[in-house]
Length: 456
Image 1 (cartoon, rainbow, N blue to C red):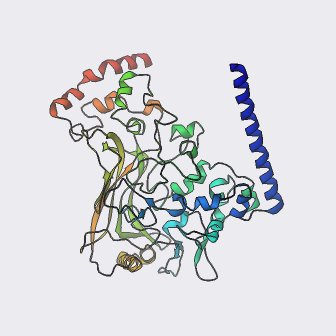
Image 2: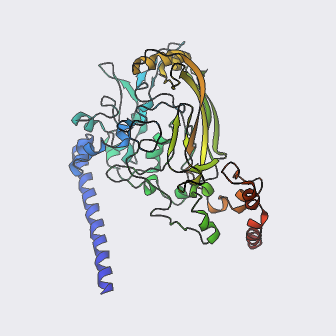
Image 3: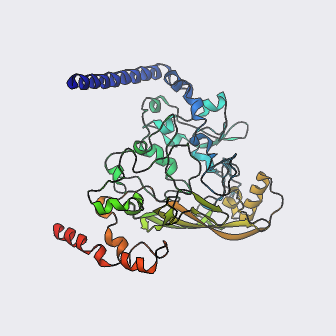
């Protein structure tokens, strides 16, 4: 009976795979015959998908947020409208536009939302039939997408829009998004390659990539809604969250019982992501002139694996003030675990009248370095009539959730429990006697000695 049941399941899987392949072949034959006309072509096999996509974070760049302090519960927040010092602008004040001519008379296009998967004639958060047909399906789904065809151009009406690769070649090579499809936007966020989060999804940098996994193997999509981690800086979400101890790993993933006991208070990332990189400080009040005659914010950067994390308690809720965005939590709240974070500090202009951070339109300073002109332009767009700009710093904690190291590079007992270990137990809320006990070699000596002998 068991054999029959298993054979039936196997036959069902084979039939489903055959059906899927047949459908894929039929779709490709349709494209070969009719060409690719954008989402309307996709909808021949996937009816209603475009309308569903318009309700997702990848299109809206915002959602309601319930885990961050000082946000209105009935409003949506995200890169569409947030102001913080990694970007100091958003889709509203830095919509796709042409930069004024620089000293050499040259101009170019800029905009925080250049990664938006639309044509910008239908912009971030737009709805309706025109918006549905503006979606760039292939930028995420084609392994042969020609990214050089996706560029900003000025239309006949003077509006700056993004062109797309809607070629038959790109359309005939569709499938699940690969790493490049995702990282073409996510790696370049924040003003350049590896600036914002400083992680690289290459085989040398992450064990998941080394095993041939791609982003959507962990971020398993449902109706174009992406599960995300709980980075205190990642506000907008599709309402689905991902954890290490979900379908892939259990809450007791180690053969070593001592390590498994740690999972109650130590997040997986703490031991398994020991390094990150990217920008660690940026000054939006001082822009540097580049060799091409344009300007960019002065930025201090580090390479992948160059930055050691800061460790603190995190209960998955977020402190949000003009000068600090970061994790809330404590040893005693019963909800927190110790997580690793990349600390970033950004300098920008604040409004002396109310203490709030002021946004900046990047077009003016990009052309001539005039940062206050950028503040004035953004204030006009946002309807802020009274303000007195004063410079100041904001500290932001970015979660370390990618670039998982191989086992032999993960933190071990001595990395945390030695006197000069990575964890500052006093700052984490432990009393002097507890710290003395936690940093005594008795905690780790015998275990590490045995391991050392086995490897000799």
